[in-house]
Image (cartoon, rainbow, N blue to C red; front, top):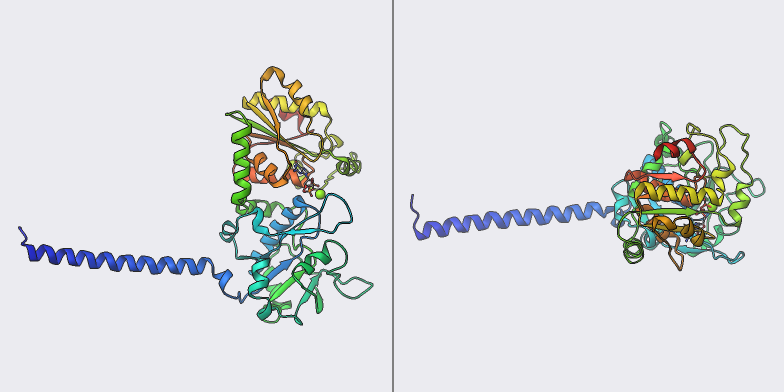
Length: 401
Ligand SMILES: Nc1nc2c(ncn2[C@@H]2O[C@H](COP(=O)(O)OP(=O)(O)O)[C@@H](O)[C@H]2O)c(=O)[nH]1
Ligand SMILES: [Mg+2]
């Protein structure tokens, strides 16, 4: 059938109308998605909030605790308030600093698992309306005997952390014997019935509602922790500019004087022994072995030998060394001379960039006891990358090659 000009014109007009309606529908649904995705940032959560001070240990410990708190907030269905990371100047007695959560990690990927809001944003947007001065309750497992209250602000980093947000507590609640174990059946019901969100909109904990080390169930939540654009960029640039093209081995050497002192407590005779992050290689029930001094504080020969094996196995062109102390650069270069690999360290040192580089390596060798080491192990676990541990599993190492 042949169409005349007015007919063609009419058809074009109808097609145009359909296109416009479709576009406007798409636009409004996109706006709707935007509002829902950001709803925790814009609207008050009627289910309430979880707030806490990451008051124990440095980055590795705080990261383990974060994963526990993330799992807990999901289990009781309250929005998690993302606290800043607490950092300590290298010399003692100088207080602590708070670094906003999103300096190191992206916020959006966390929302794929559960509702979150940064502490800065929460305090600015909601604190005066839903958590006003006069109604600020501090939560702890049990009151201190001396004062019949939660010692929310006693000492460093407790005091500086809450002071940073001008938070004082008006009263206190003990939550024991309830726990923050997100696997426990009926956890939401028990928290809601003791502390209903309408009466207790914010559960502000003196410490993280999460275990150290992170539980086996919460390890996998690491997949929602994505380095901020800045950290990721610095890691990629370092790799591009300093390591030869091709595979590289990443090694973490935790062997400063504080670590030596900690490892002196390893009790080799003990069955089922664990220390700090050691379940990462030994298994949560010691199904893969027992802790030894060499796992905690490997001799230099072990470091050189395993690094060489890793280089051979991956046909690596470079070795990246991250450490809290001596990088052993000359020892490593000498030991790897025949393999023609470049051995590098990143200076000035930045722990998060170091971790991001380690996580990108083709094979990672690290300290099983260190929670700093374990951060990169978990990042690799979620993307299926291999990790070896110093002083561990001789048999497996022999079979590897
Ligand atoms: N830049 C850098 N810092 C490190 C490295 N290893 C340890 N550190 C520092 O030492 C701290 C160790 O404390 P923590 O994170 O609690 O881990 P853990 O004590 O090893 O369990 C880290 O947070 C870093 O500040 C490293 O390879 N590179
Ligand atoms: Mg530590």
